[in-house]
Image (cartoon, rainbow, N blue to C red):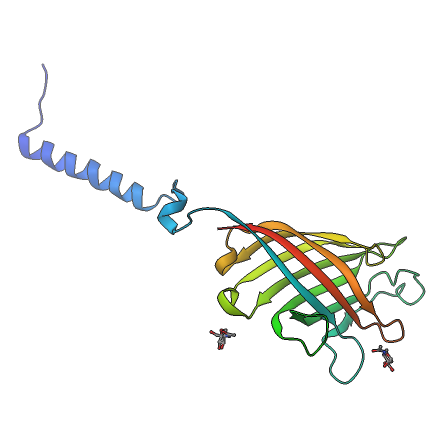
Length: 191
Ligand SMILES: *[C@@H]1O[C@H](CO)[C@@H](O)[C@H](O)[C@H]1NC(C)=O
Ligand SMILES: *[C@@H]1O[C@H](CO)[C@@H](O)[C@H](O)[C@H]1NC(C)=O
């Protein structure tokens, strides 16, 4: 004998199934989106050029040692030396040149044999349409090579979905106090 549910019980069952499905829907934690739905249209490539001032000496340093290892003093690469920076980024090479952003982060000596730094920093832009946008850099800086390449691993604001690379070239180095001016050419893909 085939038992059929009374009509009103059927309706209740359908409502229950639907509300269960809807609940399931609202608890989903991932979905596919078109880039356009978030306002991302065409990917572009930008070239950004500035000078980075690593000011170690004087009354107003922007780069300060925050840690070191027991070996740092005797190591010819100053292994373990860790420096926190909030370095100005300017349009021209002079320290008095217009500031377009800051490089905020940490660099540390991580190579026992040759001088090599781990750089972990954000470029925080302060000028024009880039004001408030950031780029994140994580890479190796062999400071005595003529040109060093550092990966851009991401960004925020106008630089969402950023990836690319930065080429660093020492413009000036004061050997007596460690002050350096580094020219940066940054090539970055973003929307
Ligand atoms: C950048 O943005 C900050 C905060 O919104 C604002 O105070 C500042 O004037 C802006 N700078 C420029 C150069 O537009
Ligand atoms: C280099 O640093 C020394 C020591 O702080 C300073 O006396 C000198 O003026 C600096 N040289 C330049 C070119 O900035």
